[in-house]
Length: 433
Image 1 (cartoon, rainbow, N blue to C red):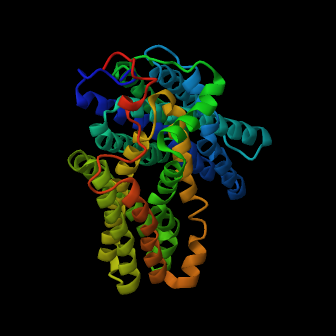
Image 2 (image 1 turned 120 degrees about the vertical axis):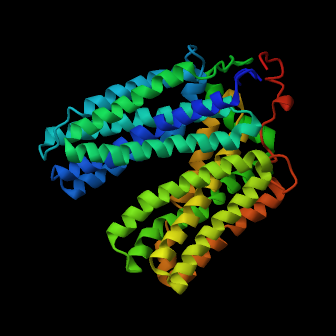
Image 3 (image 1 turned 135 degrees about the vertical axis):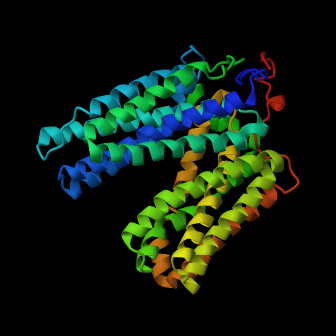
């Protein structure tokens, strides 16, 4: 297929490339949220003003609005995806480095400068995420998508640890600007990986107009899937990780009400939890190649549901510190496995001609499950109590399983509605694979 890297490229090179781009995605996000929040707090900025930084995360939600521009106007060198990646990554190096020059204070000019830099960082970072998702989708063959999703998530988690732990250690021992300079260097280290990553061949049928870039992705998806099946697929994307969203909002309040100290909760969720997520991600990537798409979606969702049930057991039977470690481990291992299969599902639903826009749209649908659909979590917990709430979060997996009976049957080879190059007349004339 025209957009995929040559089949002569070793699989490890593709996996290394998507892992490096995962680092590139995670670094600016952690800088714009955790690292900047820490600096502002240490500088005695009022919490009410720090809370406004949440508005700077809107570009990550709205990125689908400008995703068509990356499909319509690809930068041809080194290829249609990495051209954008290089420009955006070098811009992020400059922006993060410039943030080290900020001097937080309650002065209006200082606060305005910080706000503008935070918004600029978020816009460039969200745009890079569009290009990263598109490159990963176009690069990986079907059988490598689970491992690729795991490698990408591993890179992202590595950046979280490097910036979230290493950055704060540098800030504590020396000063906050050094933490930002360290993060800028981390972004710069990714650039050589982007330059040497596997090359994508040009599209056989390039997008010729902005109108086509804006309207084409939805039309192509609907035409390929069929109206009813397209709605069912979008509903599956919305609901597949709904149990994660419900549990994620209430895990910390539950653990603190259970009597665990904030220090214990923070250390267990940050250290033990991230470690368990990495284990689950790697395990999911390894098993995906053996099980295939459909069986992975089924089995990994069951493991995820078991993680929710572990919180029910902790609420119902206690268990102390060992129970806490077990619940957090099962939740995060399941979350890592579910995430690997889910990203592979999203990639399978994208046509390489429109992968930037289609992936952004599909991930935007998923984001609703972590915001709108998860919003009533607190109310449900108040009404049902903690044991009943965690049973309800487990039951929230049932609608996805019912949809999978039709869309991703156990013995099927892939999601019904997934992209297939052999059935796409617009890419049938492509050369290179």
